[in-house]
Length: 339
Ligand code: NAD
Ligand code: UDP
Image (cartoon, rainbow, N blue to C red; front, side, top):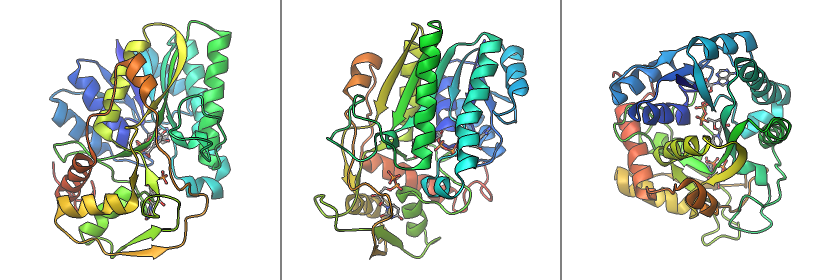
């Protein structure tokens, strides 16, 4: 009896694998390492003090997934595998639909054949689109503007239809806000392949001298200091959210939860917090708004608190501290650092 974690070598998946192993679950990871490294799984094992099963492969390979589900007698699936770069999704829409939508379809088909009907899905706050009100609650209209967000919404709809057609399915759709931070050990964290697009990994690279400066994308938003506001959530809190969601899978249904802190911080506030914990000045310049960016959004996390008994516990200082610790221990990411 095991839990299959797709994308388990990735940023959020690896932290969730640590939580699962520490809670005593058997864990099987399917990852194609398109945006991660096998090394991550060794580090997960080191932190947890026990082993997991690494089944390298692609979720779009239905027969392979079915074999893995059966061989390891998996009882549920936590599905992180997917592509997540908003900008790239505009230039490579078919690639994104293939991986995120067709990939999830193949995975669900394999699950159905193997008789596994418990599923946790990584969705995103991006499905809400331009805020009609804030904080976003789960009933906020859904109008994603990016191709990435559209692929996530397509999967959400597929899951709702599946559950309507077959009431035995038990599904949790988790809409993450902005995951940041790293494991407190400094062994695992975010090390995207290629050039990072998100604020925190860029900040960590600027503070360490790996990049020259940060460009703030716009300081003329209607926010308290003009820079963009987001609901940052520590990746360890997010991992705990999956542990809480696993418990509600015991009863059938399709439920959706925001996983966020409920508090927004501006780019300037994040820069100041990062300067404080790293004790380094962060050089920055003001640039134009990033096309498609929303000025401000944050979560109403009450539903997760009431129904999952989960809420975020780590503050912005902790998020920056752990991010910085990972950067210092792994100055070139996973490539050249030792266990
Ligand atoms: P990540 O890129 O670090 O992890 C995704 C993992 O999936 C990687 O290890 C990658 O190699 C693997 N993968 C991708 N396509 C695959 C495929 N076809 N077959 C097998 N493995 C595959 O990303 P993350 O930040 O850990 O995000 C995990 C999930 O959460 C994604 O689905 C993402 O869309 C979603 N999400 C992320 C964020 C964020 O800001 N990090 C926010 C909201 C939602
Ligand atoms: N941001 C920025 N410079 C960067 C990267 C991000 O000013 O180099 C801003 C961005 O405009 C947004 C916030 O930081 O207001 C968070 O951006 P990120 O890409 O991390 O998250 P998302 O916009 O996808 O929620």
